[in-house]
Length: 457
Image (cartoon, rainbow, N blue to C red; front, top):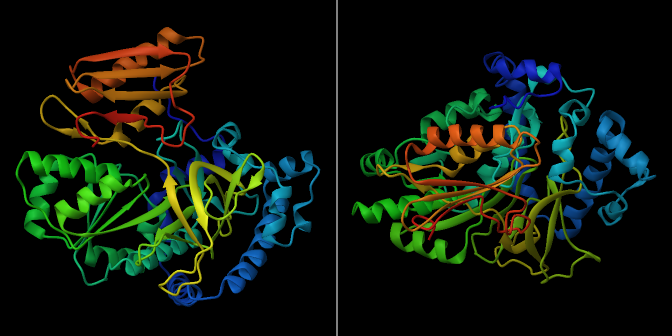
């Protein structure tokens, strides 16, 4: 049986349905001034020295720790049980005194307990992770955080050569999924003028017709979409070209980067971001690594012994310095990356990271020639009560193999619900569904929940 994944806190859940009312709260003069002020601030702060950036991080870390401890039940219990006083932490070097949190820990904690008591949830919008690394986690976005993230993305876009006067097209991975930033009056008006959206759930052949007619200069999309677009454009002999391709949300490997750069004759700029904490880093225009968004996040690179040295790979943990409704502190992203202590030739003081190893997903090619977004597959399966994790593989003969891990006692019911979901998604394509105790590689950073041998490389 498909569940509705209800929010535990009724005062939060009721406002999921009030998207139209949020518009009356946002877009006023105060928010416009905040957007302009923060834009000017980010333009300046990226050139600060490392010392100035660390000093700013220390101040903001102290603020968010005190805020979370005083207002969020989850963090108060977590730190009390660990017998640590977060209000006594005054620098980033001391953050290792705090316990880490995982995606599973957040999933197991009701949203009510993770939401700050002083937050007006009427001004917030629920936002959920894609589910590409397991069942989704719901957090809350408020107007300030949403506006700040839009500005942070805009800085990254412009550094990568995306100019406001260029024709820009953005691929949305799930249709009809509201974003709080869409309701920021001035920003939404700007986007409507210079940006067009296409939905990842639509037919990619229609996308190619649109690109050929409108000729966007900039395309913003997940890596998996570029793989599918490349595959279909080659199959249909459609010649597409752009000036800048912006990827994000998934791992961009060197082979895919080179293929889409050469085929679409465009510069490629990658952004490392996540729903839980926003934009973590963005690729330097000098292509010497990824600049960490140090004004709004604290990123740690750890192994079993503690922080890794520069040049060594470590697991990525992030603390959002700006998220207030549902704070994220020492959160394990599930990714691996390498910090560097290099001075960037671009002149920015923002620290660098490289060799990001994260999510990889592919599009599924249907038997009638359509493609199916991996996020449509993921969102369909994670809604099924009892499904703990899964792996869908499309083989070279187009057949599908689906592994399901569940600890539910009602395994037959789970299996029936999965069959129904798959028939809705894939029609009568050849499909095998297996219940397994463990999915090989599911705990590794490069685990692929949706993999196609036809469109994946």
